[in-house]
Image (cartoon, rainbow, N blue to C red; front, side, top):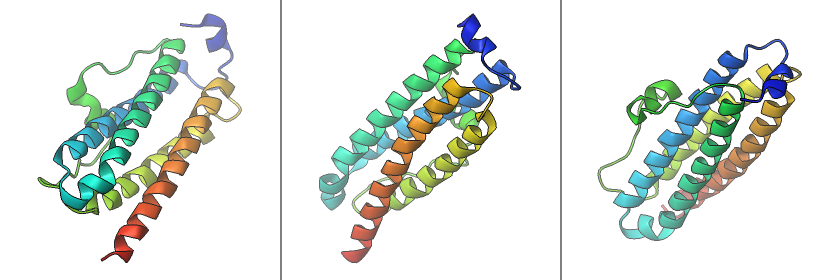
Length: 164
């Protein structure tokens, strides 16, 4: 815990902020599990087209989770340690993964999920703006990567629709 760093947080309870960041951390952990499960089920054209992107998606989510965990610790909080609570804490409605994945349909699902979490990152950025510069910069950095990932997913969905 960084005592001087916590004192820089103004108008927001650091414990509440750590809890909000933990919800994003849990979302990133759900993303890692989903991407790995997808990678494990890929067949046919989807295996050729999605294998590497699924692995990159998981690696990026792991990096985001690590950065969020570090900030949570700086704020005096702790990450959720129980993986069975990740979806609940992340406020994920459900995790959609077909039994066999032989087409590009998972891209559409991933795109929708990415757009939802972009909104949640944006809301938290708005909340910390002017109150916690360190967290704001962290979230903006992650959000930038999320927007780039959304763009890639949109391109993949469009390409998949044009081949149908």
